[in-house]
Length: 156
Image (cartoon, rainbow, N blue to C red; front, side, top):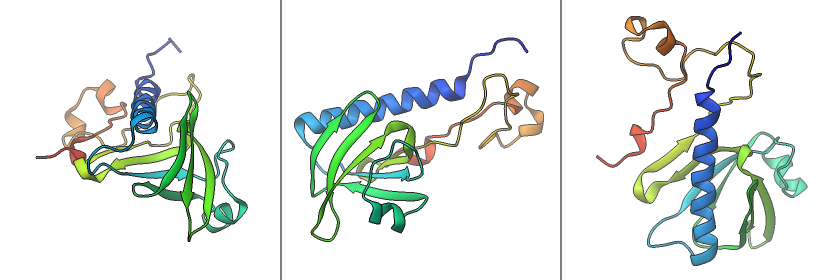
């Protein structure tokens, strides 16, 4: 098969870069205004570091909140570390950016959702995640594309 541009993975890398930049800014200067984040992560990702009791309680996905109380937020190229309060017990976590399923800042109605996109580059493209309304009228290349829609998170 001829080489193709992998827009899906390029988009995911760009969106994870955006999250890295936002969290780096928060680590350096704190949360501005009413901003806060709901971050859902895949707890089965091999590089996620959480306490055993958390992985037992959340065997597949867990949502954390960065808002009122968090400490030691450190961001690197691969992910971020943070200490969160679980029932008056501080717990350190390490979350790779690849483990993030959703990132939402409800204060400005902004959100990102990452669809599972672990495919071999030689595999044929999968069908659309959220295709256009008149999908059958679209050209074949558009019917096979992955569409990431962010409109639902924009202020109107």
